[in-house]
Length: 280
Image 1: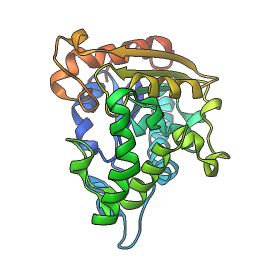
Image 2: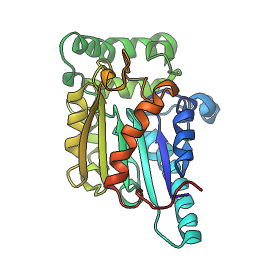
Image 3: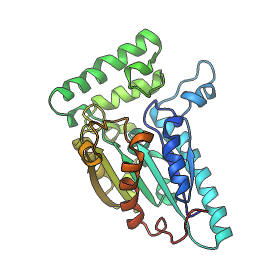
Image 4: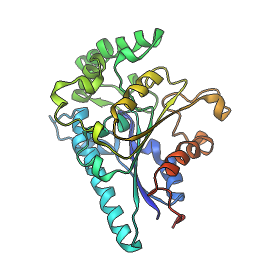
């Protein structure tokens, strides 16, 4: 084993969606942890009847628990190998934009690979997509919660699970707020993005017009003021395909073309990930 990786899912996307990517990382020598947020997929039953959960709770508790477990594995393996090992956080959308709310992230993570991780305020969208984002945050999500008591997955994307009510309403509130979660005054004391001093590589997908436009990814990059930040873009033409969009980057059929392109730069920029040790 050469390093540890955690995969933080997009909003309402089950961990099973990332299984092929996790297997590919494992073959490259990583110990990989994927997990479902409470109320989603395999962790649906983790919410007791009458309990609800917000996006910030997923960051404060669920992501923090995954980070702690990965760090413990990293420490044990480092002791066995008698050398330092890196911890890579791969964040898809919410899994990347919420990391600055995760207790211990700045101390434990060496690198952040953000894929379509963004400041999801509708003002970062352009043209028709801005109108769609405005409608989504101002009307669709709140109305869905009123009608169904949750946000049905079919409203969110082809891979999405039903979203708990409080998470959907917080997502909608942030999406209407300039700065997204960075504009929420109740989080001012715990936002720690500016103190992350590791490597942060943030990717946008050129045809991801609905969930991760370039301007929204650029806005997130600005929040990592002490990090070694690199911005990247990948387009369908780079892979010889017609489309990638928001939910394409972790599909197995795109993996062999895309995943080495995502991983190689951040390994090269992060000494603890660029280990001479191959897969165990």
